[in-house]
Picture 1 (cartoon, helix red, strand yellow):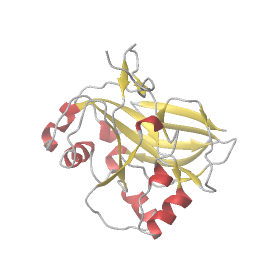
Picture 2 (cartoon, one colour):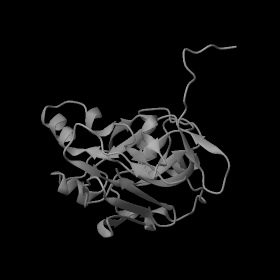
Picture 3 (cartoon, one colour):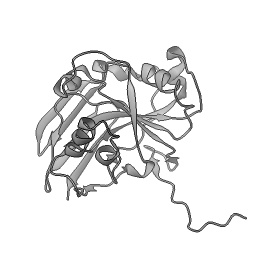
Picture 4 (cartoon, helix red, strand yellow):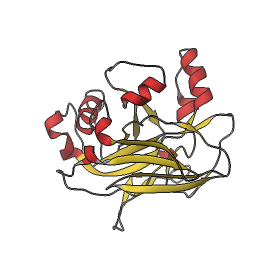
Length: 226
């Protein structure tokens, strides 16, 4: 029998229409994967995908989202999230969807002021991106391999006003390409999540704001900033 100083608390994601839970291993995020968002962030060219990470405990299904400390510019970024269901390394683009267990929609909340400061100083992004509660997601939905994910609308509203609207097909690097490229750096494992990037229109929220986001055919997320 193994003894622990404390009992491990494994973060999980809910699965739509199932009593089973998805234990979260790692959370990878793709930077600047929509051309219009890349432009609004000051970049105007296609570049190989790059990745950063959030802690697994950033993932949650909470309806109340706490506004964090140490920031005056807290931004939403609406994203399609991919859940990896089987392990693999150096995965080909043609077989990438075989490793997908399901999809969710999620918001990559960001301390934009701290992220920008880190960028300016050539430092890591953790204080801007890897904060507590910063990855709320919807339930995972399991879809057939031939589901037309690229045709789905991705959008977000704040207080009923639309801020982001695009389609998954406008990603610079497709879901399959993201999985393939990421698996050249890491052996992907069951339980990994991939946030696949956000379209243009990102912006700040304040306490009291009500946020609604969705990816059509996948799910929706609704929360209040508190």
